Length: 321
Image 1 (tube, helix red, strand yellow):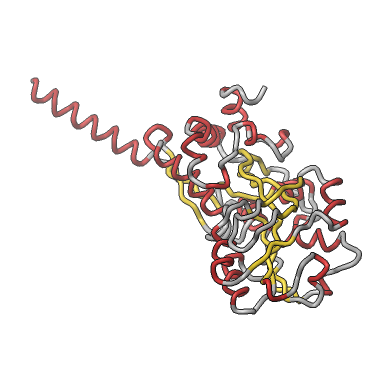
Image 2 (cartoon, one colour; image 1 turned 60 degrees about the vertical axis):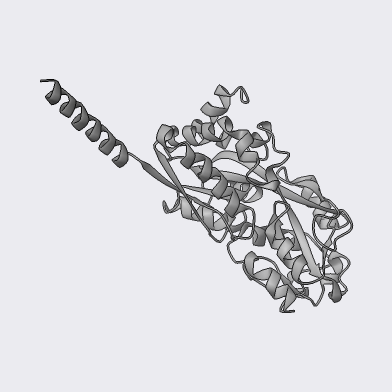
């Protein structure tokens, strides 16, 4: 009888383990180019989630994508579970502006905001470009089609009376292609909305002499920061990249983790809680998170579109009232 009982217990345990294996929920996070900060950010979230897989029952994978606009549209199509997007693109998506003109995505929900991103203009030193207005006639990469970066750069030029996109030779390479394109003189410079430091600019600076151009003196940038709630000024410190010995003042947004209204509350709650419970470990996963606080996770977006699952985790942590 004792032997039978032992066998029965073993069989029962096996059945439970088998059921647990089948109960694993798989989620995918859409990010951006592999040399930016979105991709390692998605990887950092997945690493925390997968270490807690036994407790949460969730297996997380990361996917390199075309960026903000692509991620939001793909979530809307039901082909991505989560995605990382610029806070300005999130605003445009929910208000039917920009790439979402007259087609607002009302079911978009925010899980948390993460690192700050700054619109950064890198140029090859031998081009003689010293300011934004020196871009006239130059070959400048504005971002791949469908990226939040492309949308941000276009908005800057649309608000700039002195210089338009027609005045430059527009290129639309992916961010990962830009360091080599700059070195090989296929482009003279490129915009990149990204958290710092990033491997992308390190690669560029290690292969050719580069400079970063301040946007603080551009009236169009000043107007955008004044008018748009999701923009703020920021500084890239001198010495962060080889050969750039001055502070670079520019403006930017926040990188925001988004999902849809339809994503189960429990899934979003467990993801958010895992990050909050392992916050110190999470901060060590990328230099861009160095000064991040838990309170920062709730900045840069309208709390009316915070997913209920995330709200529950933030309230439990005492960060949200």
